Amino acid sequence: MTAPTPPTQPAGHGGVQSAGWYPDPWQVSPFRWWDGHMWTAHVGGEAQSKPKVPAWTSWPVILCGIPMVIISVVLAFSQPLAVALGFVPLFIVGPVMIWLDRVEPEPIESKVHALLWGAAVATLVSLIVNTVVGLATSESVAAVGSAPIIEEIMKALGIVWMVRRKELDGVMDGFVYAGWVALGFAIVEDFLYFATAAEADQLAGVFVVRALLTPFAHPLFTAWTGLAVGRAVSKNKPIFPSILWGLALAIGTHMAWNGALVIGGEMGNVGLIGLVALLFVVLFVVVAVVLIRFRSREQQRFTALVPFLAQRYGLSAGEVQVFSEWRTMLRTRKSLPKAQRKHFDGVHAALARLAVLYGREGELDHATEELLRSQLHEARRAPMA
Image (cartoon, rainbow, N blue to C red; front, side, top):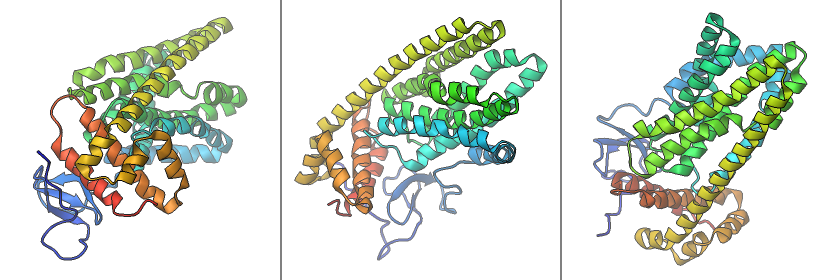
């Protein structure tokens, strides 16, 4: 049986409706937030003020971001080159994250939130815990013992937060959000490492190792947690305890890497460090192959489901022709004016998320389907060509 077509705007008022709380047309909650253009994921038990924070941030990010901004500004004044070089991994890892996310594009605001979670929440809590452990024991114990545990737990919470927001839909989303959270953490951590190295006149060497040779270290560790969470969501299973095996692998690989560097450094064993670096490269290649396979699988699933989605949601023959062939879709997007690409990307994102939704095991989440249907309808209202 065909699902009812959702209302494109709040009923009962003539004209285009302003942003506000209106009765939820799908009765998931008493009220749902209409942003002036489309229904959003914000729901509530009573009509109240508009959502208190924008989608690209959250209260944990705001609270932890204040001290981290202060620390970063102080470092920028004392060691400006160190802070500037800390952004280099963003231009190395960032494009890879964007490429991985092209099949089912996540909202920009959500990816920014993941980046800020890593830079603010994960970094601040880890900095406090590792400092306390280092003072109570030694820097080596903090590096090998506390750092891998607290850092991976805090980065994992950033991934779980996206599940809470219902933005994480499957395995690839788990990888993508894990990568952005880890990248945010790595950038701010590099601020601290590079500033310390600059004071010791060792900035060049530390920069080459951390920013150029191992920029994917943190994303590689946290990828295991993202994989575990993404698999749980795709199979409609609870995140806990499914997340534990991914978190254990993330902590284990992180601990092995830090431990080898500490032991090799204390013994002056360059060979040991080189061996670990080689193993790191092998692990990176393995994860890269897994990611490429997952991306290829999602791409094939998306294009295969386009005819079904077209029939269910009323796509035109031209849209079916564009979205059912990956290269045609990329060529079409490239040929569009910049102003029209936003609407094209909106249609693509809604269709891709619907494809992932239908690929999940278990009963279909009708509330999410109706929200995505609304977003698809809004994106299609503007001509793409």
